[in-house]
Every structure is written in structure tokens, then in C-alpha cells.
Length: 357
Ligand SMILES: NC(=O)c1ccc[n+]([C@@H]2O[C@H](COP(=O)([O-])OP(=O)(O)OC[C@H]3O[C@@H](n4cnc5c(N)ncnc54)[C@H](O)[C@@H]3O)[C@@H](O)[C@H]2O)c1
Ligand SMILES: [Zn+2]
Image 1 (tube, protein in one colour):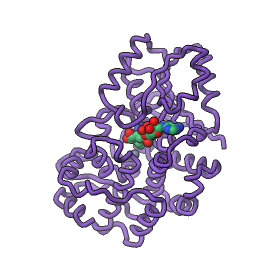
Image 2 (spheres, helix red, strand yellow):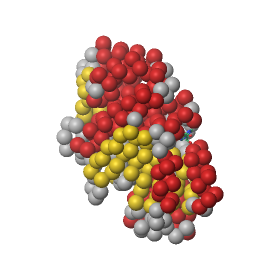
Image 3 (cartoon, protein in one colour):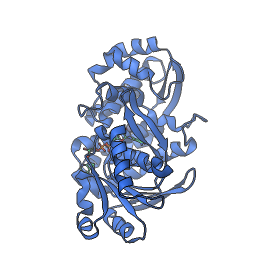
Image 4 (cartoon, helix red, strand yellow):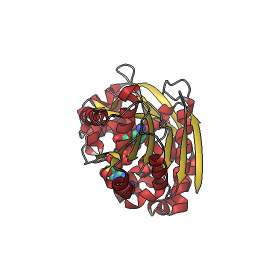
């Protein structure tokens, strides 16, 4: 499958190209252009530039992908290295890696010299279906996830599913969690399709994985384009994409972004908890809640973690970006395929609801 999707944003438009075995050709073409290119690459996918690296003595910075790099220290380190390599405002940064490399490199590109061109080759399922799309980037703080960042869109996103062959099963499932999220907030028939075909998707059957990636990107863009800066200007705001993330981000912060849980695992738990809250508040029916739980059990997505009973979790939830005062705002489901922004849930009530789970 070869697909090209273009979307407009603040100052430019972004082209997303979905094409198998295309990354290497793309990189080659970029190197041969007259631009000064700086690669920020996850070491796990170093092979993609190996031959080229020797030939061209490229400007490459290698990173160990993972939540631990999304911090101010690595950010500073990369900026200093790029500056010492004489990056200028006409240079191009190309990130090659998962969501952590992309979020960090995008933040570097947006702020260094007040912004240099950014292109991104996402190499994990999660980054191909979610984080490479929509222009959010940033780093974590001790107080919470992604609390420092800007909106800054790559000019080109190259999605090459052949990268996924080396990805761990754990990381495939992590990406799958964001795919299910897209189905749950927007598209019932996609949810049923996933429920029928998830085994082929996990096995990376090319036809199914590419269809899943494409469909997921379309849902993400559908929301992101309606409210690009998440100002909650309408009921289709991109805030819906945060379903599962209020609780999920709090769990990640609780565990200090350690490898105990990855992002997809944390938001899987978050989706089940938030579906449960929607049920307890009378929005989601018992039947639909059970359909969701059954799918998570079948696909072996995580559904619970003891941290949610801790008082600390509640304190972290209160610091979530979506809150405007001391009450909690959360994305809830009315049914599978329909989400909404629930404002002002009382903290004591959230605590009570969590204790009932
Ligand atoms: N910006 C957004 O809109 C957005 C959306 C969703 C998630 N995110 C962020 O994305 C991050 C998670 O992304 P992720 O799951 O890609 O994590 P990641 O970048 O940590 O990658 C997961 C693991 O896979 C390895 N890896 C990368 N590509 C590989 C390949 N092709 N083969 C083998 N191993 C490979 C990495 O080294 C890492 O160990 C989180 O920080 C989350 O907050 C951002
Ligand atoms: Zn996410």
C-alpha cells in the first residue's frame, strides 16, 4: 500500500507518506540534496543509515530510545551538540525512532534557533499510528508527563511498516493500545474490525497492519485538525485523543517513567479505569464496558495496576494539563465510538470511584 495524506497547519503543510521499505530511499534522497542534514536516531534502528553513515560522514546523534530521554538534560545535551556541529537555520533535523525520540527531537527542532525544519521517520507502531501525527512534542517533568512542549509539525512524516519487524511484542501491544483508543473514541465499526482481526495485526500481516496504521492516522487527524491547539473550541476537540491518558499519565508519573510500564501499558490501564468511571457515572452501559474489557483481556492489554489505589495518584491527576481549577476534567465514553469532555468531576468523587474499581 502506498498512501499520501497531506494536512495543513500553522505555517505550512505536512505530508505523511505510508510506504513499505521506503525509509532508506528517502534518507538517501535527503542526503544527496544540498541541505545540511542532522539525524537524531534511536540506536535500535541504526542499521538504516549504516552504509550511508560510512560513506557520507553524516551528522548523527544516537539515542537510547525510552522515556528516560524525554527530559531537560538530554534536550540541553542535544542542543549543545547540534550547535557545536554548526547547525544553522537552513539545516534540517530528521528524527528516526519511536515516540520518545520524535517528541524530543521535535521539541529540539522547534526551539533551536527559534525553529529549524523537522522531518520524522517513526519506527515503532505507537509512533506510526499516533505520536508522529498532529505536531505535539515535548519532554517530561517530575510533576508530570509532557508538561513542557510546543506544537510544531514535521514537514514530512515517512511511515515504513518494515521497521516493525524488529519491534518487541511488548512494544507492538503498546502501539496497539493507541489504535484501540482511536477506535473507542470515534469508530465502533473499526473497534469490531480490530476485535476480529487483532491476531493478524499482532503478527504484522502487511495488509492488515497497513490498513490499521492508515485508519488510525485518519482518526487522529480528524480530531487534531478540528482543534489543532486543543483549545476545546468544539466537541470534536483533539482533547478526545487523551482518553485513557488522565489516569495513564498519572501512573507513568507515579512510577517515575521507569520501564516497569511503558506508555501503551499505562494508557491501557487508564482506558479501562476511565471506562469504569464513565459506567459508574451512568454514561457507558454495562454491556459496552464488558465489550471493552473482553477485548482488552483477549488481546492481553493491561487492565489494572495497584498504583491507582494510592493517594499519590490522585495528587498527580490534579496536575493534569486538562484541568483548569481544582476539579478534574476527563475524556469519557458515552458508548464505543463516542467520546466527550467531562468537566469538573469532583476530586473526592474520583477517589470514591477509583476505590470502587
Ligand atoms: N506527540 C504525541 O502526540 C504523542 C502521542 C502518543 C504518545 N506520545 C509519546 O510517545 C512515547 C512512546 O513512544 P514509543 O512507544 O514509540 O516509545 P519509545 O520511543 O521508547 O520506543 C519503544 C522502544 O522501542 C525501541 N525501538 C524503536 N524503534 C524500534 C524498531 N524499529 N525495532 C526495535 N526497537 C525499536 C526503542 O529503543 C524503545 O526501547 C511516550 O513518551 C508518549 O508520551 C506522544
Ligand atoms: Zn498516548
